[in-house]
Structure formats: structure tokens, C-alpha cells
Image 1 (cartoon, helix red, strand yellow):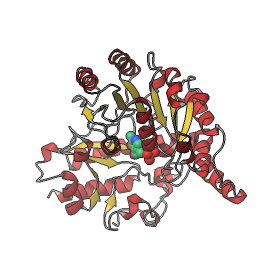
Image 2 (cartoon, helix red, strand yellow; image 1 turned 90 degrees about the vertical axis):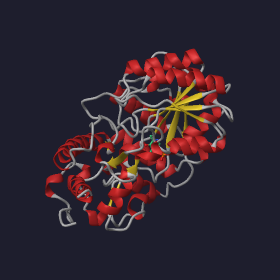
Image 3 (cartoon, rainbow, N blue to C red; image 1 turned 180 degrees about the horizontal axis):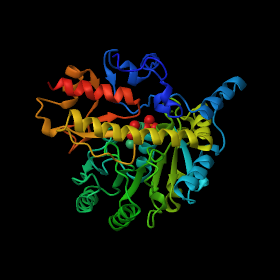
Image 4 (cartoon, rainbow, N blue to C red; image 1 turned 60 degrees about the horizontal axis):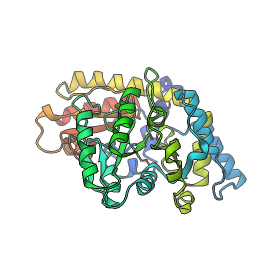
Length: 394
Ligand SMILES: Cc1ncc(COP(=O)(O)O)c(C=O)c1O
């Protein structure tokens, strides 16, 4: 591991991904760092190797100093998100009165699906997709209908329409769980695509729940379009959070947002759901949205660099592995099907290369033969990971 820095690299000033040494990161006790032994480079679960943004750290410290650790109150988080949405996405339609705090995005999705669908009503997803979609939706007793993405990683509207048709035939109140931007491919859905989704959903009577947790993590050269901002999406529901973009998963707090025609549904969310988010978490998330913009911009620039770095390294050391850099998320979706590996590529890279990646197999149809790599780390770690992965195939 000599090629990975032990001290803070001088060149990394400003880039949050270059601030922490591996030694510092290994002292962390979160899932990313405690699941595998120390000789494994962990590039799997979606945690970032960054220090907290200074305004976030200050807000938490101030709350602790004041003993402001009670129950949450007010709509500050939603107001901060509305301002952020206006500034970043040019969207002024986020109505604070049509929001609810939820503990996190996945539990928010469960609550939204309870509001718009019943037990046994199908839920459509675009595979390959974030594996917990299958677990959480399955545990609710909702059958899942897959509408696989096209070979270009985009929504295939013929396939989606077919899935909507089957869903309507299979239940009274089907729902579509849209992942936007899409995990794991990093696909950024366009305004036209989202408007088409809304039109199709309206035609078939399918309710749309959009998971937009990765929305702030979009390259400066591209634009995120909130689902609720497109024409025809008035009955949609969205889940957003600062957690992914500012690495706050341990500080539970997310927001459910209703389009104007879904506000009555959201009003039926059980009161106890709002008792789940942490007050300190909400303080942290609010500070991130209000004052964490510069930090986010530095992160996004760092991620751009990491995507380019990975593409170059793979071309040099693992040319048979296919990777299309995508504008959103900090995840790289790597096609290992031409490597002719015996078994799951994630297992090969873990056992022979001591690099932990997420196996594509859990992402549903279209995921087998792929691995997902977490790029929210330093250039040195990515370089070492690719070196190990290439060596694993020798
Ligand atoms: C698409 C997507 N949704 C939800 C989550 C989990 O969010 P939360 O921890 O707020 O439930 C993740 C985490 O990586 C994700 O990628």
C-alpha cells in the first residue's frame, strides 16, 4: 500500500476527495471501513472519503455546544432545499407546505408507496438499479416488475410502457419507482424523457415516486431536472436529501416532496414518520444545502477528475473492461463481461485483488457481469485499486 498517501497530499487543497489519508480513513467505524479487513481497498457502499464540509461541521458543533439535541421542529430543511433547487436547478416549484420530513430516503420511499399503492400492487423499476429497491419494496409485499434500461443506459420507453401495461393488469394502484439520477449507471434523465414518463404514467394511471437522492451530484457541465418540475408530473412524489452529496448518511434526515396533485396523499403520512429523522441530522442537512455550495462544487470538480482518471487507467491496464463515464453520482458502472472471468467479477477482484466493489448481480436484470465502483475517494486509491484489479487477472 505504499503508493497510497499516509499524509494529507499537498496537491489536494480544496478537493475534499484529497484531504484524508488511508490511515485516517481506516479509523472510521462506518460500514465502508468495517466490513472488510484492512488489506482490502473498500470501493463499494456509497459513503465518501471526505471530511465534513466546514459549514456542516460548524452547525453540528454549535448544536452540540448549545445542547440543541431535542426533537425536530419547523420547515427549515425544506426551505433550504427549495432555495437550493431554485439556485442550482432553476426550479421554483418546490412548495415547502407540500413536504414532509422522513428519516431517510429508503424509508421515505416505503412511506410514499404506502400512500399511493396497496399490498399486492406492482411497483415498476428500471433494472439494473440500486439493490435495496428490491428488498424494501419486496418486504412491503409489492411485486416488482422490471423495465430494464436500454443498452445505452437510458429508459427504454417501449419496455416501460409494456411494464406499465402489465402493472395495471396486475393491480389496482401500481407505482413506478424512478431513480433519478440513476444508480448505478449515473444516467441523467432529460427533461423530455421525464415529461414522457409523466405522460405515460398519466395514461396508464401509474403513480410516480422519484428517488432523487443523487440530484446534487451532477457534473457542472450537465443539468439535473427535478421530476416534479416537468409538465404533467403534478401527481408525482419525490424523495430528496443532502445525505449523499455531503456524506451525511449517519445523520438521518430526508424530505418527501409532493407535486400539487399529490399533496392530499402526502397529508396522510402518519405523524410518527416525522419522529424518525434526527434533529441534529436536520440541522446538518440544512446547513449543507444553505452553505455547502462551494464545498459541493469542489467535490464535483474532484469527481470529474476521478472519472477521467479511471477511464485512462482502465484503457491502459484493463482495456477489456468497458466504462462509460456518466455525468451523475459518484459511482462507476463497469462492464466486465468481456474479461472471461470464472464467477462473479466482484468476488474475483475481492479475493484475488483485495478490492471490494459492489457486485452487479444484486442490481437485477442487466446487472450480472458488472461491478459498481465508488469513485468518491482519492486519485491515489483509485490508481491503486485499478493496479490491483489488473494484477488479479494475471
Ligand atoms: C438511489 C439511492 N437511493 C437511496 C439510497 C439510500 O438513502 P438513505 O440512506 O437516505 O435511505 C441510496 C444510497 O446510496 C441510493 O443510491
